[in-house]
Length: 359
Image 1 (tube, rainbow, N blue to C red):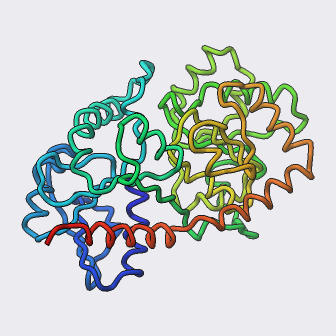
Image 2 (tube, rainbow, N blue to C red; image 1 turned 60 degrees about the vertical axis):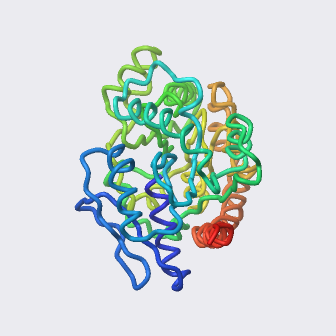
């Protein structure tokens, strides 16, 4: 969510030189934004995010005379009289909770959103979400009038593109190119376990036996999956380098044979666009927003059917014409998405809402 608003603010800085913006952020060494003539980056210190949002933010809004407040990450101050626009990326936190999730950070975030969101919905002049799937989900489950919910797609950064000379950046993470690439985490919705079982079956049938690069997952977590599913054959073929720097990702996508994004549930799926923009075929899920973002230009599978995931990996490997078709189709599809287009729609919404505010 922080990544999305960062791109939006950068585009708005170039797009809009008339309106005045105050961007409230927590202090930190990693400064991603700089103030411009009409866009002011304001640091607000607070020991925790709930306290920052519920106490420090409303006071700053009042201090700087803000006329329209856009909260960009699902939650907002409960007690704030300023007209509110909310980006509600998803409502996963209101759906059934997987008891296998032992992450304290994710569980605390889940609880905070469950407490906050129902209390702020009636105060929102507009609710923005990032896909038609999520828009219909929000309208149906939260009983919000359709005219108050707006869908604005995310974009992708222009440095995700085909690169002829990858400068062997991939060697920082994996010895050879032509690997399978998977992005996930320990959240059960990322479907890591089934993906690894599918990969095990792929290795048994493939003549090439491509290695699997998995970003930002702990060896202990993966080791437990291997033991529980008796898939020891994948151990020597998994490459787990830890965190992959964002500036290296275009080179990783370009060096990969295919990208696996087999999540059970996503509200958008920016990595789908990033991979397609690099000319790398995407195997993704036929659930939630992923068919909407990837379309038929992605390779859609039932994420709960490991056999389908395996079959599509083998089809890409054994059918060069199919591979080339998906590569070219992805390059065309991403032309429909951009952060500039996102920012233009966002600016239009601000102006529309501002006109509705009583003077």
